Amino acid sequence: MNSSNAICPTAPSSGTLGRHLARRLVQIGATDVFSVPGDFNLTLLDHLIDEPGLNLIGCCNELNAGYAADGHARAKGVGACAVTFTVGGLSVLNAIAGAYSENLPVICIVGGPNSNDYGTNRILHHTIGLPDFSQELRCFQTVTCFQAVVNNLDDAHELIDTAISTALKESKPVYISISCNLPAIPHPTFAREPVPFFLAPKVSNHLGLEAAVEATADFLNKAVKPVIIGGPKLRFSKAQKAFVELADACGYPIAVMPSGKGLVPESHPHFIGTYWGAVSTTFCGEIVESADAYIFLGPIFNDYSSVGYSLLINKEKSVIVQPNRVTIGNGPSFGWVFMTDFLTALAKRLKRNTTAMENYRRIYVPPGIALRRDKDEPLRVNILFKHIQEMLSGNSAVISETGDSWFNCQKLRLPENCGYEFQMQYGSIGWSVGATLGYAQAANDKRVIACIGDGSFQVTAQDISTMIRCGQKSIIFLINNGGYTIEVEIHDGPYNVIKNWDYTGLVDAIHNGEGKCWTAKVKTEDELMEAIATATETHKESLCFIEVFVHKDDTSKELLEWGSRVSAANSRPPNPQ
Image 1 (spheres, rainbow, N blue to C red):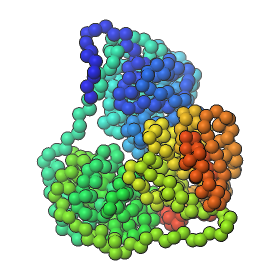
Image 2 (cartoon, one colour; image 1 turned 120 degrees about the horizontal axis):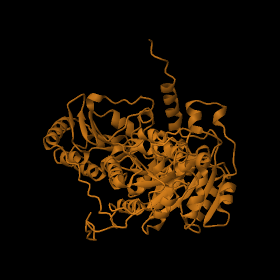
Image 3 (cartoon, helix red, strand yellow; image 1 turned 90 degrees about the vertical axis):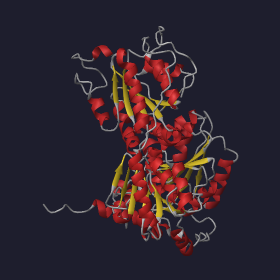
Image 4 (tube, rainbow, N blue to C red; image 1 turned 30 degrees about the horizontal axis):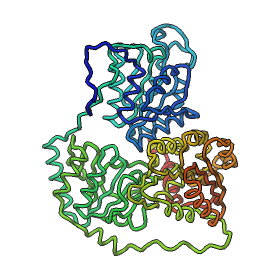
């Protein structure tokens, strides 16, 4: 990017740290900052408010502010939140850890102590009562890729710019603590308009790239029925377009790992579904596991994605492509080979092979028609998701909360350009409320459809308030089944039963006649159809909250299978000493 304004480096400047940070956030696309005020960050918040290109969005708590920055980063490539020292920082920490696990660049800004208090023996409020201000910093060191403690204006410019550029390059969160007395003080290093970043693109080792492509092409061209499986690190690698180039060229069936859903075009003619071991899309798992070669692009194999380490995948048959490394079988392995470069080059070297796709078409049986229902029969979850499927378009996005929604939303077939997000690696219940707030704020050209369980909603419900205040028009399906259903299927106990709330009553109380919000309770398919019609027509410009009552044991068959396998993995006895 080039600055439109010529800047004389020797001219005196009245620029301030606060303005510099605000302009930087606008330049990188973090145009919404999700915040909770506290006495250490108030002056900084004044500068963020003064920036015309920035929206400062006050949240009900720091955890949701962090989740909202996570959702914003998913939709727009970067997110930002601003909280106060320690009490705010440690509250937002869980959300930042989730963003780290999902490779999301989130700028976490904390208002810190007065610069004069560093190095003294003073005890400050918002601390644990020791004259050591580093507790918060130490906590953030393990969940961010860079930490900047700004308590001196002379190096503030360098620290802030290094932190923000590192977040963008590493696609991970960063921590910036800014002393509360510094944001408004002019300093010569802060030009009125900061020169935009130029981040040099990463370039593959040319010899390594050629060797990796040659070895992979030789491996795959010998295979009889190879397949491609996309994973969650396609986003980090910005390799979605290169993925499609490869899929178009080779003719292999394409599947997606559950955590990669939304990153692979499901409208592609060779898309066969989600590969998730024993709970894969019907016929997809059989095609993948019977293949004699598979190329995994940006995978994460954890206990959840591997269904309790039960995938029937042989390493000898696999090509694993990570963001900067390619490994074929048990070896060879090629480093400093970037995924986009590799996929683009490989597409030109693979022989077209549609054998596995033809096998899929032979065994594929279209989904059956849902069972007929009796008049006023209680609503079933599979009926709910049949109607959600019909709501989807390129102008919508799905946010799936941790729980049975993971499995039901996986079965949705996404139209072209339909967004899809969930947090599989970290799996923090309650994530979806804040993430819906942040995603909808960033992707205002889409209507977000969020599927949230009652247990998860109770963790983070407050920021429905912020959605209404921001004029958002998401549709939230609150699935009321009386507890933590996903935990029930892993290990049941009385702790999985929660106090039932009047969820629509709660949202109506939060609405309080201010802003646009509509709620409904539904217990039958007819009531659901009427509610969806109202939400998509009469109240299409409102936040719509639909509480769906289902039986506590009405779960997807996939959750039943997955839960038993994860339970078995969790309960393995200790190895003999």
